[in-house]
Image (tube, rainbow, N blue to C red; front, side, top):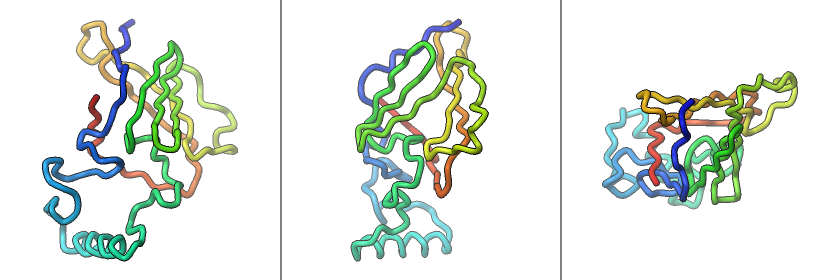
Length: 158
């Protein structure tokens, strides 16, 4: 059995922006990102920016708080490890995610009682055989609708 990594301290998204993913982390947000979008998606992006400039929410799904944002590091977070569970605690509005790592089965009533955060089961993996776990692989089921989730490029740094 491998040993768990030292994850002490506060973690933030690599680009340093709270909840805002960037195509190029070296450039400021907005049009200056110069992402290579198709004409269709450029029009959606422009409409989003225009709505935000008028005080609207644009295409930001978080304004309704229905998205399982706890699956991405949208704000500074702390990872707390216990022998059977990994907890991800997010500073903003005190979100938390519990990932069971003790090998338990999925709850029998999961489909009848879905939750916005769902149920997460995980397994620590020693990818390079050096005796230390390198990755936490997580599967989440039983998510309650409505929801939206798109967190590509999950780069997280300490």
